[in-house]
Image 1 (tube, rainbow, N blue to C red):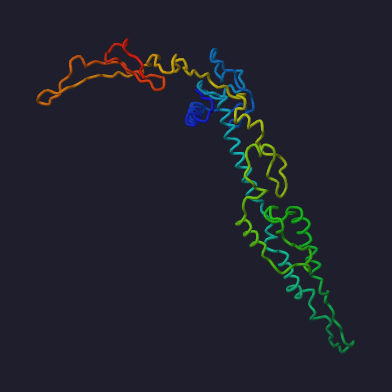
Image 2 (cartoon, rainbow, N blue to C red; image 1 turned 90 degrees about the vertical axis):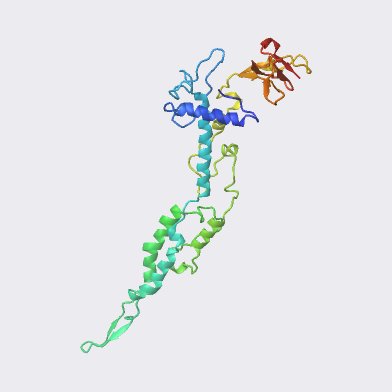
Length: 345
């Protein structure tokens, strides 16, 4: 059973979904038309109530989705589409809001450490001026002049060539060529230098990024979007647009909403309007409808001692009924005879 969606059937629709999932999932393995759990954009299975053919019957588009003959495969496919698009939107948004990690070497100002080595450690080695120049007396050949200093920039050049230049050009520029916070920070970025002579003194990068991520709010690059918005664009653009778009498409949304009743056929509804309509708005001429309950009628009175006494002829049973017309009520006529039953106003 399935009821067409209206403003007033939310609870009925929820019950129908629960029953359908129970029928489709629990009796046997549920298979989507293509891949289990993945919706397929395909037309509905013809299901004429006057000549019923079960939706699972081959060659229906969604045939063989479950081993249970009670499963409406078209409707299950629509449930898949609802769940699939919800999950895909959550995945897409998590990839927008959880930014791509930046370079730890940039965060920690690694070039500053390299500059410290060049300025503080290098003089212990080739840049030492202790022997530049140094004169040592030689009794046999005169004084000997020793000069082994390689210059103040010798270590700088080697650190630049072996470390900073390679890190800057081959690692940072090729993998993190965007501002901090995965490209979301408009002006916040590292000043990683390829030359120790150009290294700055401040190093508050990791603090600034942590502060930004803590205080970040919804912005134009990460707004809340409807399914219809996502169907026309992909918000995952930082630090670069994704090579493949997400899976939320206009066709999948039409399946999800069953646009124009194209993907799921509704069962025929018999409204019994003929039983609710009267020939005269002031009349209750519709026949009462049995509810299936039996009512026993007993009337009592009291004797002089206040004891209950059954009134003669009042003990009888009759069929309970209901009147479908507004403002009409059921009257059994005071007898057990069905012929005396009527609807009154």
